[in-house]
Length: 372
Figure 1 (cartoon, rainbow, N blue to C red):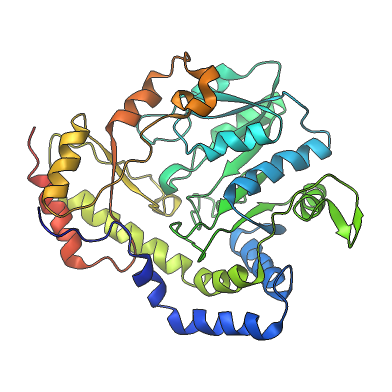
Figure 2 (cartoon, rainbow, N blue to C red):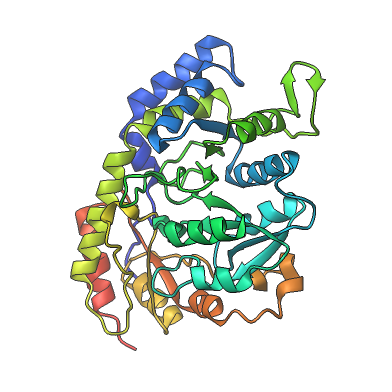
């Protein structure tokens, strides 16, 4: 087996901004103010502007971002205990956990095989008298079909929420960014994300003033004034240090997204193997920021072993669909064959800004050499 290069070189990615990140750390250290201060306020304003929305609210992580959106809508009377929320079965489990944590009922539906994203036709078929919201996950960095989903939501009076944890900076044909395509959106800044902190962090975005007011209270013990608690909230606050570091990295987001598109184009042009089904490129290239480069192979385990022997790392996003997770055993008998099929076929190749040219070529050559 050849020595394996890293699937994701976070140290190398962050090394590009080491001086600016160090200065940001020192700025926070010297300030003496570490929670909900000027850095968080500045990042929230900058990220809201980047997404083209009125409000960005920093929270502890991406799961909390989604949960707080749903809890905020419960406070406003838009959602109630047990209401159904439709979401894709092939997402990371956090999408479903947010629904459960908010006291709502997840309804799992199939993805579209060509995009990996939630299938609007499956959403429409799943709408019931108890349905109150749709969560559209922009899986792997590709925008979901928000126009069709928006039409469905409007037709049935539903909330449309984005899980944009993998789609920072993605832009649709109208120039609207992830985070501004639904009623609200949840983002994760986990270190491996396209916009990653140096620890856990998250944010939600919205143009809904009333929702923003509720969430700002809920993230801070349900309080808008010290020792006065209007709501039963939680402690989920983006800290000053992560906000300062994210401000540095936000300046690179657009360039890094283009670097990812360029690397994806190299894979798409270079990999030529009948046993591998490559991801489709959307008509609007900016609508995909390639958080992951995910292909399909019926002999996935053999392919992964072959790549490992050639020194090429790979990961599976995700090997177990939500309805087969022990945490959601009540859904184990759901018939979701497309989601189950993808779980057995998908494989992610390394792709990130600064990835060495020889590693890209090594990956292409190894993929082309695979035989069943």
